[in-house]
Length: 378
Image (tube, rainbow, N blue to C red; front, side, top):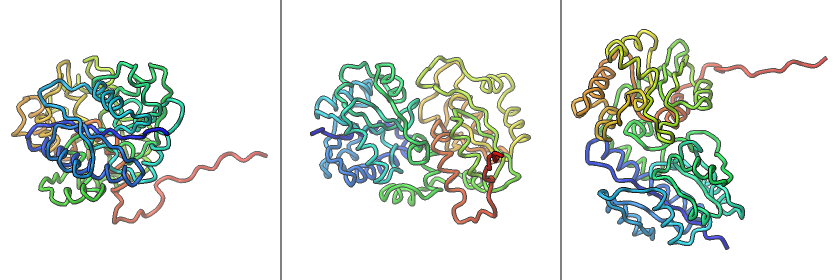
């Protein structure tokens, strides 16, 4: 009989306000995820973490831990292979902590059934940027050189000849707690498991821009600009679900899977013209903006530490060391329109979550989009 097991990896973060917020939300989401896994029939669950509080909490639930250290270079692929070999896993469910938190029992059982298949294969939430997946005949992973991070896992397995598949794109599969903005969106949507909702109710962080933006989504005449690594299918879903007019500048896709440091067209414009002219032009052309700041501000060099990036997402410009990110964050905070900053998850799962939750407690006056009728044959 196949041995089905789940491996959850919980990456350590620093002690800045934004990192602490994401760390707590991921931990709560992981505890909820373990509950869903157990209800769905997965008995063997392995946690990879360096967080003693989380390992203690899950240890009481019988979840063994592979301990890592924050000082040693972490290699996703090698640690995953260690878990597969050490626990003789045939069918694997992999989750990065913070992902899969919106999956219900039905969704989880779909992953379990796939992992139980006899033939080798992999099923991804996002083939191009993996957050969670199911792998059948997982022992095959031991003979493949896996990547150091999980994002390009789908591309790696496909290149190795393993058949790869994707789950439908929606909030359940695409939403991931990756930045503080994701936590705030989850709180605004009132989504998540029991432990996650308990945490969200205690949050002291609030960004008025999120509430203002959600109001815009219900206004037909409003103009919303979305900038960043936007998948066309995500935009199509979002555009049909909200009332406002949307326009997208999609750049930087595959930034982590295929890093080349080439930058983006809009990032070049920002560098040439400066932050104030860029935001002024944005105010002239939109009533609100959702910005994936990582590719926009990346330039040729590396992006700053999570402490700076997360402070930017929370619009806490005074806590940012990098001058470019600090100036851009201050300008976004002072903009006349609501500007919401975040990472890839904001313009991926975040858009699905916003589209699903913006109508909560509000009636839709009439259909936003008419049904299509095909040409009748004579």
